[in-house]
Length: 498
Image (cartoon, rainbow, N blue to C red; front, side):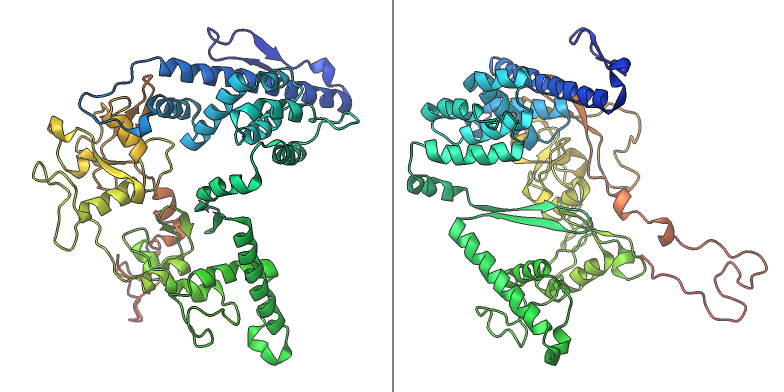
């Protein structure tokens, strides 16, 4: 195997794996070790280039569009560099920001760590663990800490610690070398407490929380006690209806969901919402406490029970049809997609600047989130932007509106990035195959990289599957005419209409 860059004017030469060196397991192991050295060198070189890109962008004029207020916290160069890096590497801007911060610190603040990475003495994972811990130290203490941690990357016998082992060591070393007391640091750290949601596969999500240690420990203790109480009652033969077979881990998860939703779900055995539940209900019993706004994320056939295709939970992903129907039943209202209760159309022209609720709801469904490629900000936090600016004659129509997150909206308003119509002769009426106005757009970055800004694609989830499509016409002689009524007179069962 050999490697040659697709950009020989930038990355010259080639890399070849010597076939004669692969004789037996020993040779293969040496090849893997050699590749690890190359990975480390590549990471070190990438850090230099990422840092250089940020420096060069900062040296460019970034005043932005005339008359626009200062936005992005005044750190425009950093935001532009992150957005550009995400577009170049095809990553999220969160990952791009981590890469930029890591590269800047590695190259400029910790040259010894950068040299160890370039020589293959440590891996990129080791370097990231060290830089992450050093970033939480005052500047005067960061470099001495990094040098001390680097000297301990190997055990006394010379074995390279795993990244996990080294991260634990670095965390403990940071605690010992930090010039500020833990009481002082705790006051600032408490400001970072937060809760966030991460979509997972098969209709699940991970709900995480960063909390003060004693608060989190108390919460976990309560969940564990509820789980063990429920399991003990399930094991009591006199209480056979509670023998549900759930593990302690499952019971803790269900207890957490129940305690959070107690204000919405009350049963006779629980008493007031402020009291602890005697036992932990199943997840299905909690759906009455989840209020959903039903637009068209649930296909009509699924809602009516005629299909087992998945539905979409806004911002999280596919969910099973039974859960979708339960959410639909608990929803306080069903919203119409194309117009609101007053019949607001999708095109207002120049009669109004801000889109009304019905048009906004349509944009949220159509775009699904920020239209910038790779941006994962959900639709509810995005802003409706006029592709052709209002002050330039743009209209408040679905065909001239697109959702952008506040950061990308600011970049576009400052004319540092651009969102323009794609020059194409296809779909001249500005519609997709679904009939929803979604003009083809191009997101052009500061350095001129052009990426298609497409709306959310739902066909792979919400489109009918083969098993959901109407059955084929009956063959001749089967006794069932094409009308769907057999000769016996009983109609053929068909799914409810859309």
